[in-house]
Image (cartoon, rainbow, N blue to C red; front, side, top):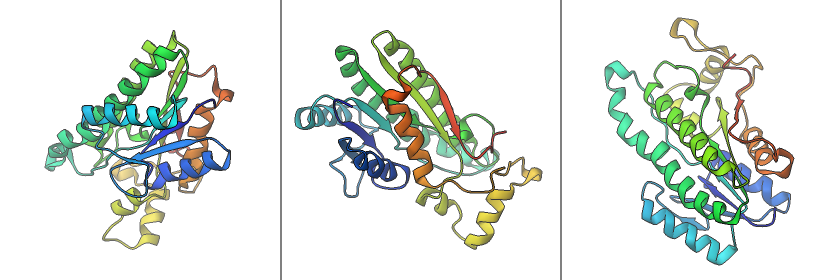
Length: 240
């Protein structure tokens, strides 16, 4: 790639795995997150902060060739029993923040007529999941926003794609297991629970962050030069 890749949510999990992968391949990266050892700390729900951060990144590192928007938030709970209360927060940290980053970076890529964008959503955006209604709705909005921005950018040669991970061994997943024994929680995730309309994972493994990072790296690369507005599900077959 001729310029750096901006990676949001780079402080851990999938984001940090992508940072390591691209650096091993000699691709320059710029990292942002709310905390941790990143180049720029930024609250992505603050549009002016995002614009200022992207300006600073391009001044210091040069025009962005790629964007991997990995940052996001999770909440679980029955919609009928209080889970809907999480929706305003999830709409802020998922689609609203995504929109801020897509617009800030997309406008600059449009001016240059080049660039690749990939956004992490979730397989919960594609099929309903018990106790993940608000989260799934917010990630479905992320998907729609990304594809709509991608449609606007396509004529300028800028590609936008979405990756939908399933269960991935990240701090976010482990937090959802809190209060239970890890081995039992892992087995339950693999097996699913048809009484709760929760599908298992046919490949019988939980993804490593590197599995998702490889998919992101492919969609950012010239090897995917004719792929845009696509949704790639990386969940071991869980959405069937």
